[in-house]
Amino acid sequence: MSTPAPATRSERLERLPFTRRHGRLLVGSGVGWALDAMDVGLISFIMAALAQQWLLTPTELSWLGSIGFVGMALGASLGGLLADRIGRRSVFSLTLLVYGLATGASALAGGLAALLALRFVVGLGLGAELPVASTLVSEFAPTKIRGRMVVILEAFWAVGWLLAALIATFVVPVSDDGWRWAFAVGLVPAFYAVVVRRGLPESVRFLEAKGRTEEAERVVRDFEESAGIAAPAAPAASPQPAVTRTAAPGFGDLFGGAHRRRTIALWLTWFGVNFAYYGAFIWIPTLLVAQGFPLVKSFEFTLIITLAQLPGYAIAAVLIEVWGRRATLATFLAASAVAAVLFGRADTETGILIAGCALSMANLGAWGALYAVTPEVYPTRMRATGAGAAAAFGRIASIAAPLTVPVLKGAGGTALVFTVFGGAFLLATLASLFLPDLTGEDLAD
Image 1 (spheres, rainbow, N blue to C red):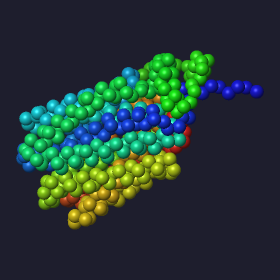
Image 2: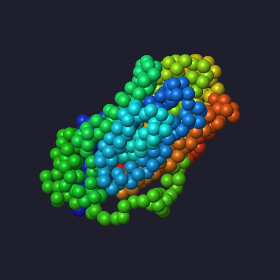
Image 3: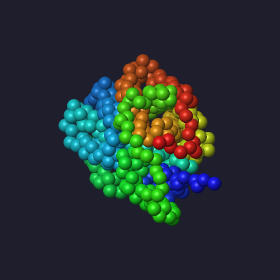
Image 4: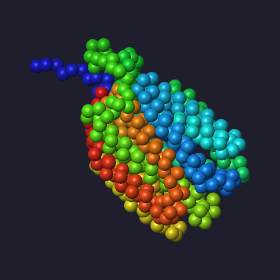
């Protein structure tokens, strides 16, 4: 009778229960995620303030809303490649530093050109952080709750956007320099980068892929001790997968063999979600002001709508392990399509709030499911590259969407704007049906 092979380090991690060490990783990554959301959210409110203070045209406002996403598209692709080369944690902390400093500097901008340049740099850091953070968490999460952990990570986005709404409501309208003080708060991520660099572990799968097995073993033992599980007495006697030195992954690998269909479906899903989400939520405060609501009232409406993100994440976190990844993602995307059309046709305060909350809840539940699916699509050596490339392709849509809003509004009003967003959600729904559902399966190496 043969003796079963000792578990690999990855298997040892995947079989663990949720521990305090997992909690620290989740909260540590989530705080960075929330700070990211706060920065993205602030610009949507500051646009509404600067439209009045700087007398910006709709075209200028469109570029102010889009330029950060140009940086995010580039940052997402480069961040993923770097994370597969130098490590998830290193890229995570570097991106926090970059966009934190650039956001703080935005408070000193004397004109539109300077603000646009700084928002581009902010986008570089923001775009690189999100796919890297979700990859890091997914590679540590126990198999049975991996999807749920990533959805909870994504839920920190609602916390950050809520912070942005609170800052906008109570700081921006106070004085003509209120928007500058709001940007100054954005310096916080630069200081938090130090915490990330010291407090979060590097991915065990990444360390093994780079031949850093002793460091990988220390990280695994740390998590096992947190769970009260004794590690193997002699790790050297437990054979681990041999490290194969292969060429660093490139974007061409994403379309090779079995990955082609997955990549196309994933990219189309990211494109549709980005177009609809950022087109809507970047412009909602400004559109409400254009409909005759005072600036403060517009911010209050957006704050209430933002609160609806939280139950969306909570429901998705439950369903992601019950229904599975694909069914949960497609359901929330379809609900987002319906809610978008209803929001575009709402013409009363009550109707705007109800449809807006439904859109917010459904859309952010879809985001949580999408971030859970994305790292599972590719093996370890190209996981961050694949996640970053999908995010980068989606950022093309987030660049285009804010630019199209003035054109669509001029052609058919708010109803046409949100009907188009509903169509984008429908595209994402159909594409998501072609993604693999790896619920309950170990991550591929």
